[in-house]
Length: 124
Image (cartoon, rainbow, N blue to C red; front, side):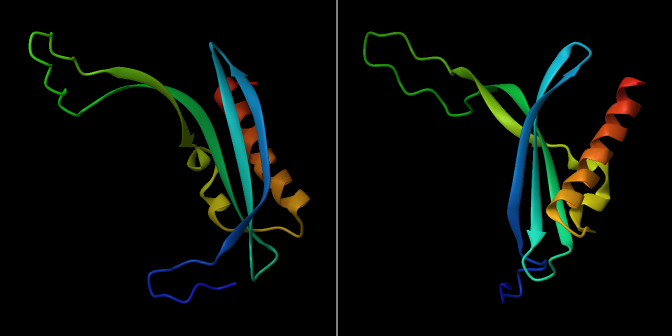
């Protein structure tokens, strides 16, 4: 599959596999997602994304609505949200476009890079 438009500068990749698991690192539980994509034209080309779920406290930047007459004005509000933060770059730039003979081989490459990264990060 190709998207024929001058703005499209890459191959088209299709999501083939998604894994989710929790990493327990010193003092932190890290919910993690790995997504594996296959090039739609070159079947031995792959792309992977590694995501980490983070909690963020957000504050509204909108000005509060005017309070009705005789009432106290409404303050800006804060709220907690879960967001996914991409962490692929921490493993390897190779994961943007790499070769593997199958989805299993591609995922093994990603998991090997993740394991090596965890070994370096944790000293184990």
